[in-house]
Amino acid sequence: MVHYTYVTYQSTGDGNLGEYFNWVMVTPDRNTANTYFRALQQFQTVIDSDVNGNPGAKRTFTSVDRYNSQFWTYDSDNGENFHLAARALCGNPKMKQVNPDFSSVFGKIRVYWIGAYADGRFRTFFPHDDGAGGADDGDMLSGYSFFVKRRGIHDYWCLASSGYVILASSRRSRFIFTILQKSGQKMYPKMPITDDDEVKIEVLDQGLRIPIGVNSSNQLVVGAGLSHQRFTFHDLKARFSLSQGRTQHANGDESLSIVTWTNTESLGSADSFEIIDGINLNETES
Image (cartoon, rainbow, N blue to C red):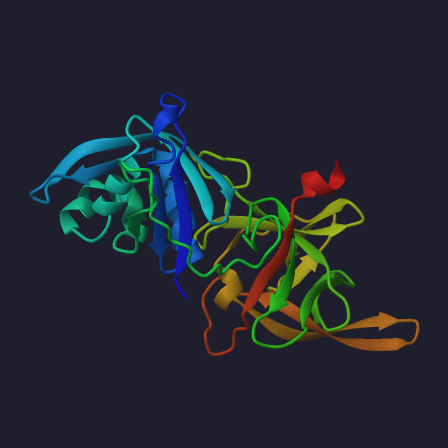
């Protein structure tokens, strides 16, 4: 299923054209859409193409704002700029050369107008909603807390227990995923996490954030004095597996399935995980 995003012109300089410049952006998945908007926020300009398919004018965006995972707004000196920028990234190799900051989404974006005709009628476009419901439609935002679920297997979750991150079926922990800022990178509230982001992971325990690191066996360990391990968000898909360990209790030893990380993809033995049910910590703590 492709991902749809509604985008509207929200100009501080010309409020009369807001309802005219409305768009639906179609991308292969949510990560592509988030990557594109993140790049627009960071770099703010796209070189469009002229009528002959050659590099043309610079299209500048003064603000790009997220309301939820499928609704974004922008401001620019021309409401048409969103369409012109996306059209420049549709597939012409000349445009890729002059827009290197958008190379990862090049050829993956299509934009369709849903604004108002001169007689007041609107073009309507209401695609299937692929969101997961809730305030943020299942989106993955930096600094939020999530449950971590094993893909494809019912009711297996990550749990912080006995100093490790383990797999369990009866209990689960909340984990905070936060983007690690790169040099020169702009940060925004409610910033979507994309596959290429480096992140730190913390366990949320009774209001405390406890770091997650790795031990000499690359097992995920939890402790207040640990240094954060740097992960790539894409690691959830193919760089975690399970290893066996044991812990002692008053009633005897217990076997544990410990989540283990590798910095290289191991598609033959890796498990795959996903994060769900994100909660804004600032809202829950207020």
